Every structure is written in structure tokens, then in C-alpha cells.
Image (tube, rainbow, N blue to C red; front, side, top):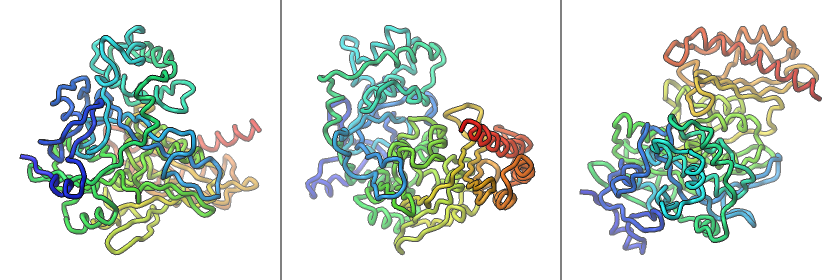
Length: 499
């Protein structure tokens, strides 16, 4: 039987664990720490939400969640700005965000609001998204359709939408209708009417994430009230596992059957969700989602602007965080190469206080880091000014929503035809993400010419310890490294020619 800290919450005047689903409050009695939102919904008869892959790739399980709107920092450098706190005047207080229900523990949504495809419309009163899909032949077997409906609805309700961004559907797969009628339906959508309840809901602040404790089946999930409680839990329990967007842990639970004894949910902790820019650095909260970062930076970091659209899908980016991506220490995580090229550092926080670690010194082995068991990544700091020439090259079997075979990030300062500084981050070519230090040394102080680049590319092809696996051979990976630098040089020549 499931037990919760319900008595403690009620003593403090808080409600029992539950969430609002399609406008109706539902309790979380009987859930376990590892029960996903997808399973909970289907058990309640909301079977429009489907399980396709159970790892966040197909989008059949997409639902809408009400989230607070984060401010845009602007695109310049210097001047203190913040991406946290209330939205600017004229901006909605809440946005509807599409996420994968197969990955997130339902207990992590205690107190939140969720809308499924059933909550958007009925057969008698179709939602505009559902109607357009129906009349334009965008549904055939129908298995994937509810997920498409929710992802399209999130884009439909985007406050600053002038046209439909088809990348909103990059995490939804369809194999029977084909994509043309689905895209036709998306592009035919107008704007929400004044009496649309979900559009009107955007003007009301979204629920504040509340303290939660769920205990069942020998495991526990806790949403701490603040950072101090989170750190205390990590210090007190060796089996505590911090969870933010659950895009990595969720796969371990659903696909590999992992059952962590204690999940500490940190995704909504205010202390981890700031975004500040001053003259010296950009500080990005470790629990901001990638979509929030993309919007809040507003083009301030061109290298991240190249990275983020290639990072999984919009559904994943709506949940995934930099803290989680770097904390897993995967050698094929896309964020690390770009942040290595930007010479980023991490602020770690634990019982002994805060400390700053250069990202290049963070990784110590395969999925191992210098972060202590009782520490959290609090923020990622990117020093200013930024390099003038940047690029992110991701090589994968699919253009989007795929894992890298190789990822290469460049950040160069070319002054008066010479390379004054070069920073290159690599992923997929060693047990950890790495800096291509020998290639950097080969470039710095030399003229930015084809001869220099060819010599440096030969060195770049020897960086790391590439291996052969199902994604690529070691020879292919080395060839990709060499070609990536040649490609960057060719792109800079083309840009100069256009000036």
C-alpha cells in the first residue's frame, strides 16, 4: 500500500497529493515513486495517451502541462538581466508545454495541471487542432494522433506565434499517414478565439510546485521545499538520486526496469532556475529546461542557438536540463561539447557550501565526475566576451531527435587573419566529452588559411579514442573530425565573400 506525508502536509495547511487533470482534481492515492504519468493516465481510463517507445522518442504519449512563463533576457551582452521571476508586462503568466508522459513520475506533478487529448475536445466539439487533422486526412491508424494533437496544441497556444513552427512536432513520429497532411493541418491553424478556455488560462499564474513525499514499494520520491532540504537529503541518503526533467532517469525506469530507492525531484527549485547576464558571464540555472534557456537567452549565445535545435526534440527540450545532461556525464551528451568550447564552468552546491569547477575538469571517466554524491549542479557559467566564430556540428543517423555519432563545437577568435584563440569541444570520441587541446595549440598563433586548417584537421582526426559501435566506426569518426574543421573554414570564407 502507498503511504505519503499527507499528515505532515495537512498539518501545515497543504492539500493532499493530487493534480488537476483536464480540469478535474484527482488524488494520487496508490501511486508509487516510479509510476509514470502515462501509466497513471491510462489506469484512469484516459487511453488517448499511448505508449509507443517508452523512452521519449515517438511522442505518442505527449500531454500538456501548465508552466510559468520565463522572461526573455534580450540578445545583447552586458547589463544585468534575469530569466527567472514573473513575466514582463504583456506576457502570459502561464504557457502550455508539451512533454512526454512516459518519462515523468506522476508524483513529481503533485499540485500541477495536465491536459490530455481528451481534455482538448470531444467528438461532438472538436478542438481546432483535432478538426484540422480530421478534415485534412492527418490521422489514419490513429495511434500517434493524440500525441500529435497535444504537441500541436502547445504550439497553437504559443503566445508569440505568427506562424506554426514545425519543429514543435520534431518529437512526434507517424508511419502510416505520412507527414504532409499533418503539416497541412498545422499550417492551417489560426489563432485561439477569445472564449477559448486554455488560451484564457494563460493569464492566470501556474501552480507553484509544492513539497511532496510519496513512499511505496520500498522506494520514496521527495520534492524538497528548497535547496537546503534537497542537499540535506543527498547528504543523509547514499541512495538518493536527484531528478530534474527525468529524460534520462525515466528511460532507466521504463526500459531497463531501474527502481531507484529515493528520487529527489529538483526541477522547480527556484535556486536552480535563475538566468543572469552581466559584463563578465552568463549564469544559467541548472534546472531551467532547454526550451526555457533557448527562449530566455534570446540569441545571446550563437553557439547554443546552433546546439539547441539539434538536441533531441522539442518534447524532450521542454523537460531536459543542462544540470541533468552534464550530471549524467554521458560521452555523447550534446551540451558538453558546446559548453567546453565556451569554456564554461559549473557551480556545485552541497553541505560544505558552493564551489566552482571548470567543465573541462568535471569529467573524470565514463559517466564519472568530480561532483560529490551530496552535491548538486546549481548553475552553468559561460564567460564573456564570447568567441567571434562558432559552430556546432552534430553527425547522427537522423537530422533531429537522435543521438550523436560525433559532436564537434568550435569557438575561435580570428583577428586580422590569425587565430588568436581556439577552443574545440568533442563528444562521441572518448569515454568522456573532451577538449581538443592539441588541435587548439596547432591553430593558435597561426594564420587562418587553408594550409593551416589542413594541418590542424589532421591533428583533430587523432584526438580522443574513437571506437567502433552500431552508430559509427572509429575510422568514420576520425574522418568526421577532420572534415568538421575543413567545413568550418569553408563556411568562414563563404561568409567573408558575402560581406
